[in-house]
Each structure stands twice: as structure tokens, then as C-alpha cells.
Length: 119
Image 1 (tube, rainbow, N blue to C red):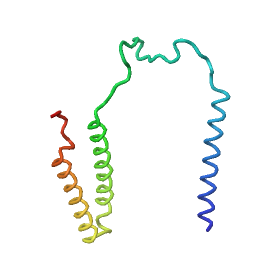
Image 2: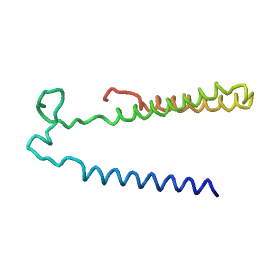
Image 3: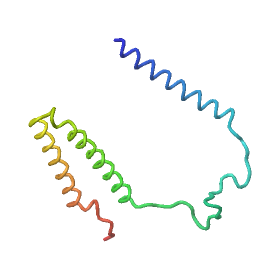
Image 4: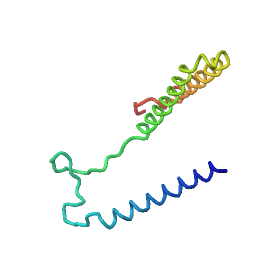
């Protein structure tokens, strides 16, 4: 029960601190307005043309696939560090995990989720 109290106190103080920071920044922050305030600016060069870039959905899909497989690689690293404690049971669990990874990768290749070429 005490752990729950600590957890809720942490959540309460974190929320209170966030609200305080937002309130303080709205009061103490600068409120200047000029005609150049909302213009995009990069490296001292004035932008030419539309500054809103549209990326393909495939770009975001590949980025999500990378993050997913990268996190799964971290799980495999943790497994490899604790291989002596897990024994054969841990080995077979990691084998099943790797098989799921490979099956998902083959599925992504089959549905052409990793292809960049437009057809």
C-alpha cells in the first residue's frame, strides 16, 4: 500500500511541477511581436518557396520499423548478458523471439513495406 502512495505522490508532484513550469513560462516569457517573428529562418538564409515539406508515409513506416527492431535488439542484448542464469529455457525463449522477429521481417518484405520505389 505504501508503494502506491509513493507512486501517486510522484504523479501528483510531477503534474504540479509541469503546471507550475507552464504557468511561469507564460508569465516570464517574452511577448514581443514583430513582422519577422513567424517567418522561418535557417542558417541566415531567407527561405524561398514553401517551407512546408511533405514526406511519404513510407518514410515514417521505415522509421517505425527501425525503432521496433532496434528495441528488440536491446532485448536480445539483455538476454545475452543473462544467458548463464536463464539456461536452456531462456535459450529456447530467445529462439522463439528471434523466429518471431524473422517472420515479421519476412512479412514486411513480402508486403513490400520496405520498398522505396514508386510503382
